[in-house]
Structure formats: C-alpha cells, structure tokens
Amino acid sequence: MSNLPLISFRNVSFGYEKNLPTIIRDINLDIFEGDFVALIGQNGAGKTTMAKHINGILKPTKGEVTVRGKLTSDYKRDELAKVVGYCYQNPDHQIFSQTVEKEIAYGPKAIGLSPAEVQERVKDALHLVDLEEKRQLHPSLLGRGERQRLAVASILAMGASILVIDEPTTGLDYAGITRIMNLLRTWNEKMKVTIIIITHDIPMVADYVPRTIIMAQGQILKNAPTPEVLTDFALLKMAAVKPLQVTRVSERLGILNADNRIITVRNLFQVLSNLKNEESAEVK
Image (cartoon, rainbow, N blue to C red; front, side, top):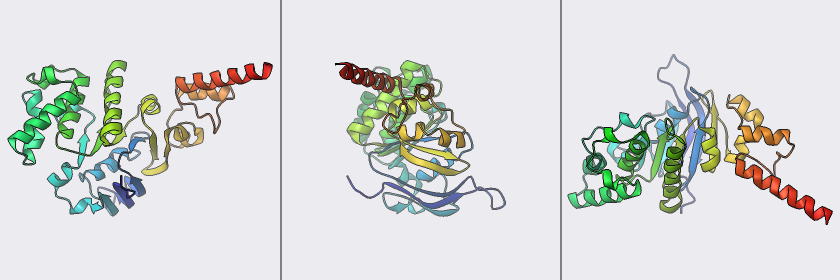
C-alpha cells in the first residue's frame, strides 16, 4: 500500500457564484488507500459539497483536488468514474434499468468492457450484494435496503476503488443497517475499497467507522479516530451534533476519559467489567 494520499485537498474553497458565500473554504485533507471515513456535521456544513469534489461533479473555485496524484480537473468524466463511485442518498435517483442484472451491467458496458468481462463483473457483484436470486426482477420490486445494495453493486462493477456514499442507512431498519454496513466493512477490509460515508447517523458511525471528519460552516473542525471525535463534547457542540447517549451516561458516571473513550454500549460494558475486575483484585 502506498504512503502517498489516494485523495488530497489542498487549500480548497468552493462557491457557486462569485458574489455568494463559499460553501467550503480552505479545506486541506488527505485520504489514503483503504481508509474508511465518515463525514459528519449538520445540514449545510459542506459535507456533500466536499464529497462531490472527489468524483469531479464539482471543481474547486480555489485550490486543488487530486485523486491518485492527478488533478480531478485533468480527468475525463468517464475516466474518473472508473476510479470513484458515488451513491446518492436515494438509490432510486440512480437506478433506471428494467432488471437488477441490467442495472449492474450498464456501467461496465458504458466504459467499454467486453461482453465476457461485463458478465463476469455482473456475476461477482450479484454475489457480493446477495442479489443473485433476484437478478431478473425489476428494481422497483426490491426493498429499500436491497435497492441500496444494488446501487452500490452497480458502482463496484465498474471497478471503482473509491466509494462515496451519501446517507447509506436512511430509511433502513436495524437489520438493514447492519447488513449494508457489514457489507461495506467487508469490502473495506478484504478488498481494500476506500469508503467515504456522508451521514447524520452517529450511532452507526460509532459502531462501524474507524475515522471521522467533523465539519461546520464549510470547514473541517477535526479529522481523527472516531472515538476521539465523538467524545469531544466541545467539538460536537461547535458542529451542532448531539453526543451519543452512552457517552453522556459514561461522563456522568465519571468513567469517560482519554483512556476510556466510550462511544458504544460494548465499550461501556468492557470498561465497567475492567473496573469490577480491578476492584475484585484489590479486595483479594
């Protein structure tokens, strides 16, 4: 794995009009191959605007964005699409084919792969998202979580090594969230797909995402391991993000500190178990 950043932002600002305020400003950020990152912050913080610079939908008003060492402005749109896949918040905004199989095949065909290569990628993608038995169904007959997995599969079938997903858990129940997030974690760990999630689902971030970038008013407030971000109450207040309930409870119990950054119930049980064991050892 290269030590060079896969994605770099250098002094990036963006605004739609010269006489309007910038939406993001002075962004400096490196994302490396194999990273699994969450972008969090309130609506209007600049998360989606920043993400859309990665796949070239937007170009910086000031500064530079590079992917694999090349300026996004120097990529052709279809060339960058082979590297960076973007899933919208509502999967129905990008699904349009008559069957699941045809939806996955569309992208590989569009980038000029041979029929044999297209079929191989469709087969692999169907297996990865567990939709093999529904390959001939119309996408509208799938559940919300299945359509989300289909949207992701159609991007991975193009060979994208970077996946940007806007609100992957919106509208899903607990089982659906668990399924899509376990799928993404597996791709990240085993296939080294670099994953960037834009989300308001803070409990999901605590459970699944190792690194978090928190934004407010178009700027990055902090880019750090998720436990460090989600236990910084002052930082969360600046970004208008509510601390997790388990973290607030841990603070009131007096067990939240730099050594015990509690952001999940599992964390809490482990810390309490350790304290109990320590007390038992002292009694003996």
